[in-house]
Image 1 (tube, rainbow, N blue to C red):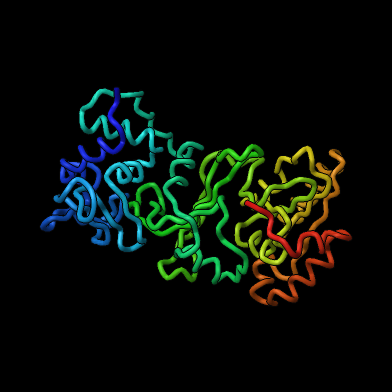
Image 2: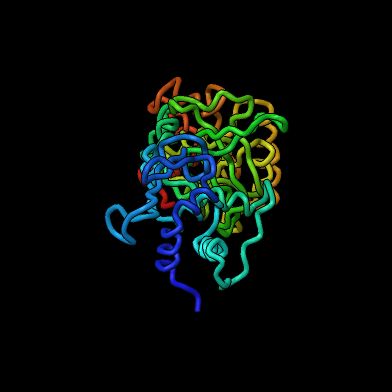
Length: 341
């Protein structure tokens, strides 16, 4: 019979320094602690692992804390986060490290850019409230709640400017792309400036991975009415003022035009950007919607997109513009309540 998770954690704790040298090789020992930047093995000193101490309780060996983000756990948690593994897969990895019999086959590494890679990275994130991602979204004028299941924050996601450039770890907003059944098929990473006031200073601060076509980042469950736009910030700007309206961020104009319609859908609002690509997306969706018997209506901003409208004109003027473009009864239906995530 395989050992219980608590027993594995205790065995790992007895070899805490060996675990750190294997998974946190960018760190070093200082006295009774191993110091490193974070669970992803980034160089630094904000995370510390207790190397000696009792098996449980205060000061237990193997317990770690990342003071920069307030995360903590034991060595099983560390292995799971470091390798991007589920809990079951982390148990297998721990048994492999300890040279114990395997209870099941070890996981196959996720191919780079795959849907599985997207799912593993998203599992490593934490809820947005109280993080740098909240600081960023509030700086973009977003008013509504940010505890959406599709959004997470990670303090150190790798970014490489080009193939020959070194990797650098930057904080990032993670947005899960899901299909109609709620399965994560892809992910968008938005790297953030450490101040939280803007995106990171890259030519490409946003990158997606996994399968996006036909899917999107979903804010609320749609029944008969749905709205969709391109960017996370644009969609959240509208969601702030129409909290009951289910919405999807498609992440680009081409992906917006290719969104898969739910069979129950009767009306579809296109939260378009004010550019040629946005107009083409609306034309394509109107054509597709007409063939499916769906009433497709554009929501058109005054500036380049609705996030710019929110920042430039404020919530009252933007709300008034949105309400004027909604079908009768939809304003009262969607203005007051937040749709459940």
